Image (cartoon, rainbow, N blue to C red; front, top):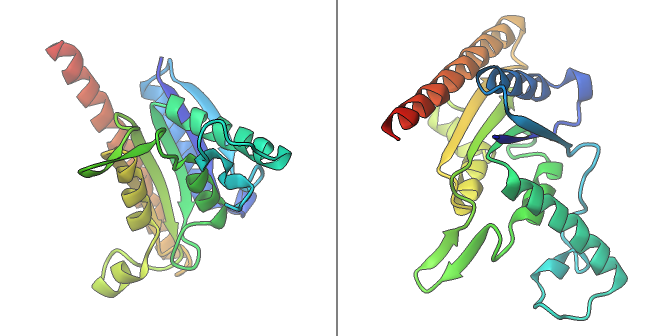
Length: 217
């Protein structure tokens, strides 16, 4: 059974386009993979605290004397990294906030970025330990960033997520993008139409790849 982790991070609730897109992505995935088991994490509601002296306890050597606060924070980090590692597919809603990702999503990434769990250091450099997963990011933007060199230089959303998931060893990172959402009704409608087409194509590609793998086996 495929396990899918559905993550939202937008603070806009029902007005969020990224939440709309992640729901569509999950529905599309389940349509072509009916046996998928879905778990849900709303980082705008259940936000892990940002890294601090207490929440860095998971980086301390085994057997270290931890405070009660560090133990509680360790339990949060362990639950999040275990949930992430158990998933075969991760669908992430990632709106662009001030040229980057929501602080809530960054807090989650900081908890799952653990030496020995999602990556390790070797004499040849860092090695990702969470490979073999598929990550689908619903990327939403008020303006246009993908159509110019200046825009690409300003965004630290998709580029960051591709880097960090790649650092974890995940090479299959896909983006369903809707940009220009704040540039008028026509631009928003076009952005959503493009995103819907991307969702359909991503699902078809995955289904085709799995069919080919089954035949090869």
